[in-house]
Amino acid sequence: MEKRKVTVKHYLNYRAKERIFQRDKFFPLYIQIIVNGKKAQIKSRIQEYLKIYRSDIERLTQNNAEYYNLILEGYFSERLLDTIEKKQIFPLYHLMNDEIAVLKRIIISMRPFDNKDFTLFNFGWEYQMHTTEITKIFDNHIKEQFKKELHQLFLRTIDQDDNRQLFKIVNFFINYLNWNNSFSSTYEAASEIMAEEIKLIENLISKELYTSIKAYLAYLGKVNIVNRLFERRQEGRITTLSYLDWQTEVKDQVYKEFIALVGEQKALEYIISLDSILQRTIKPGATAA
Image 1 (cartoon, rainbow, N blue to C red):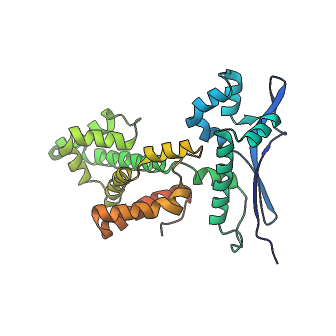
Image 2 (cartoon, helix red, strand yellow; image 1 turned 30 degrees about the vertical axis):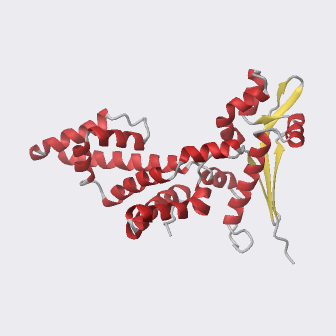
Image 3 (cartoon, rainbow, N blue to C red; image 1 turned 90 degrees about the vertical axis):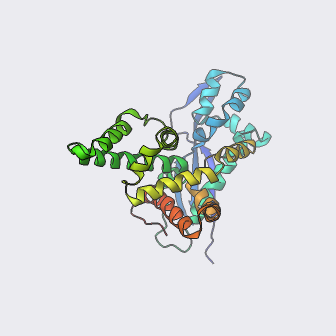
């Protein structure tokens, strides 16, 4: 009978250029993946997950800047890895175990044992996309679409005397709002001080974009990202609210919250809208189910 086994483990990439600290050789942390004989080696993303644990790493390294930077850049020595394993050092031990668990969840979601097209080719990209913060994906996508439609309105009204007021509003939105900030903060701030102008714009943008905006703002109101972050941080876990989380738990949870907020039909529209954004970003060419 064919074995159905998924093996995921960390290792030091000795082929990479070493870095020396106090006579110890440090190498970047990598991950080996084996699924039914298929193999892949990818770089660990632990340096991304450590950003919120900087104070813990400062204590671990006793404020030694060189040692601190090595760990935050994802470099480890054999001795350090051994110590992490034996002493279960927070948060490194917990993050490494969580990373393994996340990778196994991604692999299982790809149905490796009954999908004849399953491959580990380019799995590093799969890992990155599945663990990207979905709130950032929503925000960036909607911001770009909103700016795009603003520019379309700008071009339509630039020479229309009977639309001078609309032209001025659109011009202000394009050139005077700070688009370096998140879309949600920019939009909510504008809604407070320019409520009538925002309403006018909302009546002119596409239905798809309008639904996306309302769905995203409702999502932010129902998903307590801050509480989730601190809960996970206390456990030494990966704090990202990821596409993998969306697939396995968050989507259903948010849908139920939306039903209570706006009713079943509108809730379904909101979920389809958000899911479509993720599908286009994570799985280009796919459509939301």
